[in-house]
Length: 472
Length: 68
Image 1 (cartoon, chains in turn red, orange):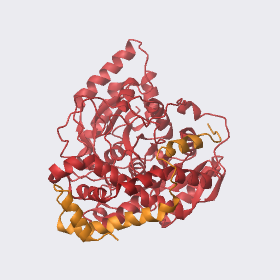
Image 2: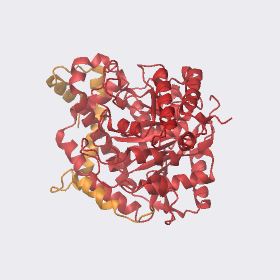
Image 3: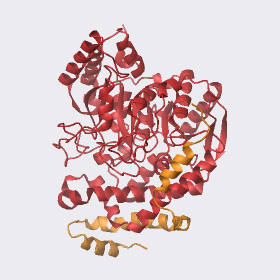
Image 4: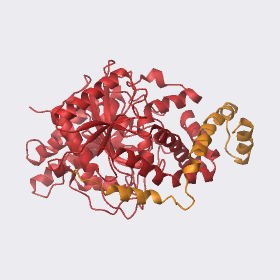
């Protein structure tokens, strides 16, 4: 008998639609695993078991009545605890919002609801989405499903762990400097950060409005394609959203168009790559060639990317400090030490510097594109250049050591947020500590189809995305 | 050069933001990094460019070879 909680989102949704299983059975399998292992992983802040069962029964009833089913009909999902649902708590990983109830529902959740997805709980996140390690002192320690001594990475920590641990089929994360891609990479799942503006952020807690992107963490590229097809599109309530047609991302996976050329990034992204990571990525390049792609080295301007890497925190901290100014003044004791401290710098950045950093984004985007996309359609880099660190290696650091740790984790991801480009995290092996490693694919603005096609094709010739942690 | 004394004086202007003494010593390191980053990039800033040029660049680049 198939355990559908271990299948991909698309396989499960299609099985429900075909009557090979029911939403209730799938939900029960997920709730059973949550009950067995979330006491170790701590990726859920709240599980709504009764609500999930009732929603599953309603989904099954709708199917029996012959109603039109959405593409995610009956599939259990859960989301980073920063997506607002009217009348429900959205704590954003904080004490400040521990009991705060959202006055409206996020556009992303509305679209998932309309597509038939079930929302079975709230997932742990780093406090106010600030921190790449993935832990949050306000909650029990969230742990990596492959080894509980290792970080889950963040800030969408619970999203990566819940999908990797087979507790839900997909989850929303958000990405300001790597917060979809890094948790995906360390938990061995597939993550998609769409182009800045492709998915509405209305009702998603703001961290840095110039960089924040909403996207899915799921088990396969095909899963990401289906979820993006539901999420993408203009939203009159989000002025940053593109009013442009949304392709059929999943249908595009079968396109007969020429495969995108893949460029292995040389310069900036290949600095300091650990030998274990390099070995897995060399193998990934060979596997991509075997899958029919032209793969070649692409020289990128390291000095330009170094400048971008240093401007990213200038913008992020300015905007974060602006968001939190009133509460930091009045309730600083309610922030954790680390997050409160990270915000301080934003108060001392001159507005003129912040605005000049924003004025440069178009310049840097054109310069990067000229160097990268003139040579290849997609750029391939490691997500993390290092093996996944342990919790002990990243806990309790302050000052420069903390900043160095942040840089080590987000070096290859944050520059892409500044550029507003779409990127994916795709599992491609394991390092010698037994933890997953993943590559990042970067594409042109609004060219998610090319990313998804490449990742899907890669996953047809490899099985890294199918590997499961022992804990399940 | 950002020094701790400057941070202390600016902090006093933010009446209700209470930085710990240790943080006042630590912040200048971070602020100096950010200041240097902007100083290094300053020559690239075009007087006539506004921040919405970023969206223009996104749309320009969205038109590229289709592998869809």
